[in-house]
Length: 592
Image (cartoon, rainbow, N blue to C red; front, side):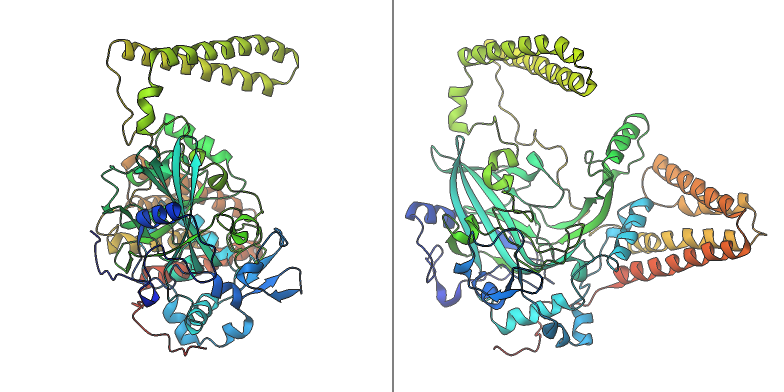
């Protein structure tokens, strides 16, 4: 069962699960009942400001922006193929933001403290601080947008009924139940110190059933940087909790990412254009690992900015849904615009999201067109098909087909070398190597079948970089988080002092920085590596400031001190933030 405070939310008027909403096209009875039967239970974080709901009232309250100054009123039924990727819905107006008091906005911002600073290394904390500064430079949602969205949603009574959208599709040999939930807004940045804010938010989950008996075998959900097989869990996995036929998913505060266990999750977001750092990281991992225990979860992003998803499962539990079909609906199948305001953010983070089918560019999502490939299920048959799949005769035919591909690649490789394009040679060589490896593995399978020792794949063998929650006590101690908040400002202050005061010798300054960094958590080699890298950085900065004139030294030092103060303020706000606001508190708004 769930942990913490729970409250079951039912549909308005006591509507039964799977009832057809007014004005909605009825879905096939078997599809609707199947979707309603297995609709997941969502457990929210107790400070969550927004709840999954119908988008009909939201769209009616929005303006559809079709150009720079062209905005029109629309209804949900108007969202179809007339509106392409350049359109967007705008929910909050400048007047709505002006109506929000500073006191209320401060109360709803950063509603809970985070363990993020104490869970990542010095470099990750520095990247995170730089990202916080970028919010002032990038086109992001204006201040008070999240509070104004919450107030307007309550004024219009948009979140009265918990609504779940779904469709049933046949993909390969699987029967797939595809679920989607809509939120009025994602306030991860302002509410929880996360990556972004954007109007509108779609989160999704999939249940893969054996069509022979309708039994659920796999369940998958969206959660940030995780991809492919790491998104899914077996129905019998000890990490998965069920209540009858419903799987329990824990929604993170603000971001609404879905997890299988309650807790705080460190999420690392790629920095665009720095994919090359992933290769460097892999090389370092092979020759001298500098990763602490919390990073030993696979290769991860190329250069990740760390954030924390707070999915503690201590809020309301939504167990009953008004299930509505996405099949054939124009808003799902045709509308390619954004479901929130388009800020034009070059990093895409603060733009409104695409829908369940289309991404922000208006392109069809892989999760919609190929749900099996999206979660790495290609080649994995349902249990009822395994017996017919695993036969010696079929395996022999597969090996024969693979032998033909190997011979073809072997013929192409010498010719590719004559083209003078090394990239073709490398690609063809890697392909041939992969084919030979697969053939060797299939030979092993054939040998096991002949000996009567066939084994089924383990239910966790596919996992490489799964989402893992922090310790049950919600992460590092208060002392560790405090030191983490002070470390980056301290390093910048030491650099500024060494530049300003010519009497400070470079040697003692480096020793002081090194000793200051040694208490950082992680393995001894990781601590030593961080200290060494930072000491070298200080040495370069201080040595480079030597030839500068006095004015130049002063400018560099002032910039370093200013950054130190800004980082201290940003980190301190995150460290001590805890307003205690919960959905039980009122926003003092009257219905329209």
